[in-house]
Amino acid sequence: MLEHIEAALQRPNFIAFVVLFLWGFFIMVAHPNLVKKLIGMYLLQTSVIFLLVTISAKAEAAAPILQGSDAVQSERHQIDPADYANPLPHVLTLTAIVVQVATLGVSLALVTAIYRQYGSLDEDQLLKRIE
Amino acid sequence: MSYQLPVILFLIPFLTAVCMPMVGRKNRHCCRPMALAAVFAMCVMAVVNLWSVLVHGETRYAFGGWPVSTSLPSPPTGIEWVNDPLASVMLVAISFVASVCLIYGGPVLPQSLGRRVVLYYTLILLLISGLTGIVFAGDIFNVFVFLEVAALSAYALVGVSGGRALMAAFRYLILGTLGASFYLLGVVFFYAATGTLNMADLAQQMVDNPELMTSKAVIAGSTFMFIGLGIKMALFPLHGWLPGAYARAPDAISPILAALMTKVALYAWVRIMFWVLGARAEIGQVHLLTLLGALGAPAAVVGALLALSQQDVKRMFAYGGISHVGLILIGVSQGNQTGFAGGMFYMVNDAVTQAGLFFIAGAAIYQHGARTVEEWASLRGGSPWMTGALIILAMSMIGIPPTGGFFGKWYIMLGAIEAGNYLAVGAVVIATLLTMAYFQRLFVSIFRASQASSSWARVEMHISLRISVGVTSAAIIVLGLCSDPIIKYFRDIAASVGL
Image: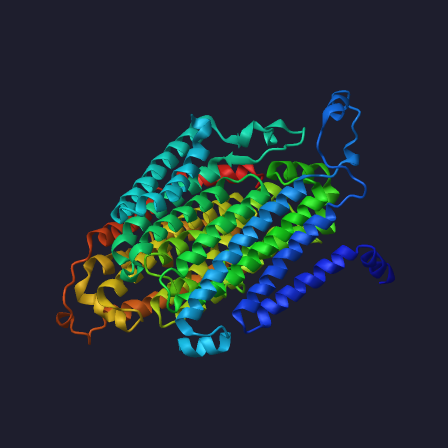
């Protein structure tokens, strides 16, 4: 048990991820206000992206760009990949953020349409008005 | 040329969708012919693609010429699309169902749409291109992106006509996004454990390091992926969004969603299950396929049970779809060729059947204003086309020969017996009986003697409704009659993944 806690404490980013994810999930499920549900959804999506960024963080890594003299060195195979940050997780993050923004756009449009039609954002009131 | 076919197949609906708002701004009536031309072209290309795969074998498309899994063991750096027998046959099914749905869509589109009809066609083509992307993707992150492309179009389509559908669309969006986040979380775990996203490379790493399969990251990753896709495929008990979304969606839209969205999510899971994790994958000490079968059985039974208790016909059919997702999952998780072939065949058949059922449900609302089981009595005198097609579709849903549904269920059950899994056999039988019961309710309502048929005016069905309903019923019979070669085709696919 103790070693599990110790192992968890060595990875604070995982703890932060779990807290953010569950927090977002809770808001999304429990809050009656539609816009706040969306905030929870956004938090949840961001927490996943946060995990992706933190697990790929590397201390004292250079940007993975080959310039002038580096390019010559790379031809002689003198470059150690361990010195460079991995660009792929950042690319994935960017794509995931784009997806997230698109989702948020569609959901806000839906919420606006709901508000125009029923004049409320509270889920309980909305369900009553729909009945 | 044949190498480029997957991309051409994707670009046909995608480019048409992009051009649609530009063309449709001036000439709104051009939209429908344009969309129809796009999906018909897609149908033709899908058949050509299937033929090319049959003749030349599978191809792997490397985007931008970057090395993909064909270059293994050197690591693939590019995005890859896999054009293999399973993907090509799925694509024929998708483009066929999509074109029938678009034929059907014209007359039943809500009049209130007005100028937004342009956006309806744009979104539906985007949905089709997203589904095409999921089918071809050979990279787990790519699957995520296309899942979201398809899902975002679907959310917008459900809410397109406003009213009560808005709330259903919002719920669908919240749960669908939750599913996508779970899936992305699974992708992150896989990436952290293996450093690759390419499906073939992942599979190779699983074979090379057997301890990877028992590592916590891969177990957690595959669990999250399954939960995410489980929400998308509406697997009981994660089905909460589906009945509302499909029942409230405009009648022109629910057929294509019911037919394709859940099936393609299921297809994505089959891809990951058999092409990445491998058919012999275990989680802890439990065989992963046994676990899936155990999840499929309650879904099949409970879905059918809930369908039986519905008053609204569209809702009833939506629950029927949930039950059938369970049946397909039972089939593919038996761990033998017969079950896999039966499951995949049932998936194709169910895509057509679900589309047909929602066509009839929509047409009943359009022509008779009949939404509930009681109101369906008005179908009796007026619509020989609808009742005729309904009989064929019901035969397929229940599983009576010679429809496709019978052969799908038959092979699923044979597979379960072969695996000695009698619980699954029982679940299929119970689901079948319950399916019969809820169709019985419909037919009792339609053919009840106390309803005088003369009191109902005979309504001439719109020609495009007749075409779509007729074509789907014919397709189900054809699927049943040609089931032998198709089953054999799926068996060969099953053999190629080591079942």
